[in-house]
Length: 571
Image (cartoon, rainbow, N blue to C red; front, side, top):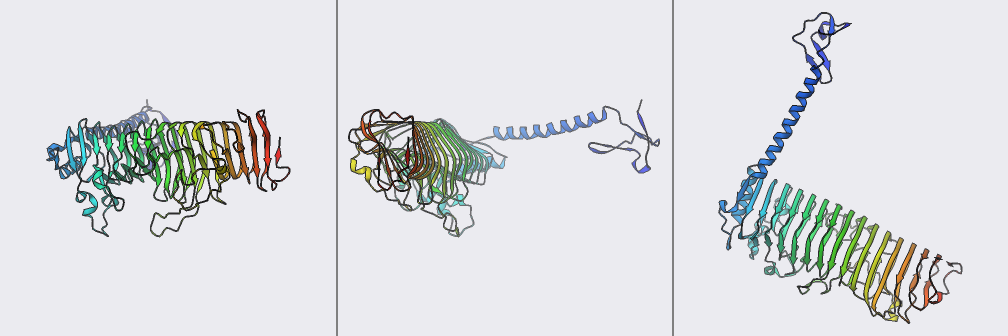
């Protein structure tokens, strides 16, 4: 029986019923002057119909995607030869274009050597380089894209950059397989002018690169610029044949994951850049092995937009063992290098569980003012910001005598840096006179861990910094070093808690504070006999507090210069 409601209705509403989904005609019902109520299962039927329709759309989308994934175009079917002598560029490009025209799929490079100039990827296309296959870059500069684009052409930027594999404004692209990309970069061994990169992708979204071996690019091995949602996994890079042989460059990208990769490069290894005012943001690097004659794990040098929300963890760093340096040093320049020199902001960076061996400097932080401009008409940037950095659980062995440094500029301090649970070993051998050396500011210089030469401290030299914490830091030298272990110059709000620093007979005081205020030193002290624990210099030295320190091996707690306020130190 149909339920009714004793409510009088007008003729214009007769025969309809307003449900949650709108007005539903009730053609089968006769108007009786009372509002009819539909059967109790009517609304459920409507909901079921909507759900079924939604699942149908999802199924159709999934089926379409699955069909695209199953489409495979073999480059041989498009005329590629694969003998390493015949230029297969057009055939490979034809395969990519054909695959894209079908809605996407996989372009297959089977076992063979596929000689090529620039090829352009397409959206929803996977380039599969199978085991035993090598995509071999041509040694002829005329086979790369830049030669075909006249000056002033409106062509895309990707068509202007030398690269073996290129693409711009693409979605859902991938390079996979167990094969090799070899750029034959030794054919482009000159410093000036352009040289082909291995991979160059700009403005792309949902990019995956995994499994492949990459060798011998004419410049950077790979460059991902202004891309979103990038996954790089399990690749093996060896790049040691010409200048600027970086291993992996992430530039102004967002939401990037780099995992389980091996990178061995002459120039920087895994490096974040911002060659624009768009920052690198939300980047995770984990489980990688990195070897470099320059900097293994680096942010900068180009830093127009800066770096935000970056995590680097569980990585191994060492100097290259199977190559001679072209740039940098044979033993490598830095293990961890964080730099802002072209404006921009470095903020919220966490580096942890890094094992470093045999590089020149284990940790280098630099806020400078090179002030490079990256866009036409862009005003010259001011000094950027370097803040909120945590570096913890780092072990370093066999590093040089230079020492680590954390440096800003007068009026522009590095801010809020935490160094925790570090065990760092240095060569040592520094002279006593170096402890009093005046270190130049060099604001406009290219930032490099060796830029200041041997520092007044063999452990850490800190200048122009605020809110700095060293907690459970162990420092050792392989041979006697007569410099300070730590130097702070123009620093404010410093905590040193649990410092364990080896001391050499006749060395300068273990810690020197110059124009530094609000410092707490606790649970620290030399393990061997020394003359002086602390040296204070400058009329801005104040608020220095010593707590719970083991100074039984010290002849003199503090050497205080005449210009230091009398109440600067308390115990």
